[in-house]
Length: 260
Image (cartoon, rainbow, N blue to C red; front, side):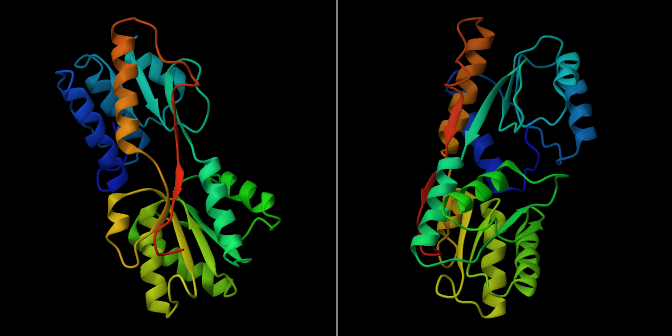
């Protein structure tokens, strides 16, 4: 289950999971919840009696998932809050975000902003990593604008950020889609990338290598993420020894291209 089929990151994760599952002879159905909790709940209610296991991005409380799944194996991906009842693959991007901010500071940037995810009531964990990295580099937390997870959202958010903070010379974004929107805004505003404005995204989308200039990013191994989710599912189905919490981690690393 994924929250947005139109977001290339989730499509890449789903494709990687499909490849790993097919290699085991499994039949997989992908459900798009539209990032709506009611749609997610309705989907879980429908499929609970039709599948052997569920893998994906779920926002329901643990108790609700437990009630709906009736004991089926569940493997969660990138759930920010620790879960006790289910296997959960954690994305560790703290080191990668620090490397990104350190690179920007070493390149001479002192005024660094962030475009965070707007669809949350509180700052994201990636924002926490950004604040921690800025502090470790001796800088204030930086200015933040919140963006919808779309190219248009990134373009609008950067436009707003620079309108209020024209001294910003670099931005880190919640994901690559928002970063691509930031590149478009920079071009429209006459900011040359990376000379006038450096941009670093997060996710490592293949699409990032195709934009102009090619996008620097804190990259995840989506194929490894999909394979790890399927491996844990297989272990749970076989009631063999599941992977430990420390083994269910995918680390993101800085991948420099031409935008920073």
